[in-house]
Image (cartoon, rainbow, N blue to C red; front, side):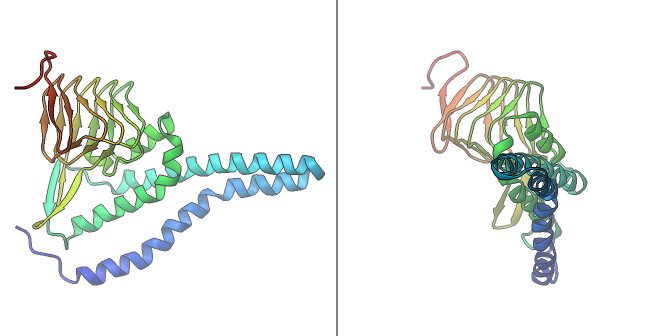
Length: 240
């Protein structure tokens, strides 16, 4: 096992001081078009017409802000995302720092992303962050916490509020493991899929179910509960 990184605390604190202002700067830069539209509306109109124009400018400015926020953060993710099927390292390691950067991008994207799913804009952001999305898949939840560790097959539905994690921390440090979801699957509302899970084609994970790490769900089965277990087999019968 790799040894913990020397001076991890110092590096973590230094990067936090440098990166946090940059995150808020991204939000500010994404707001520039909206500020411009608001100012222009105030110059071009007077009275009640000005109020209507500025109100519309605020609304459209927020829409543009959401899109630009995702484009900027997605571009960072495209450059910095890990490219691996799985990885493990001590908590005090460069892998943890790299994971933390990607998690920060996700948190900065959340205010925008929650309004952009499901849509091609949300899917474009997920793809830039490293998620593989099959044709016709519907990602309704913004809670894809490690996009670069997630694969979703064609015509699969990820329900609202569902959480997919490609990472976890254990006694020996951070673990990254690919989550693979097949075609025509349904991940129910508020379900949780943990690292290393493989879900076969046409399988269903019921609402609020929690799938433990490295669980393999055979094709066509329905799983539910906490922790999730098979509640209906592919042939329609219940498990013994």
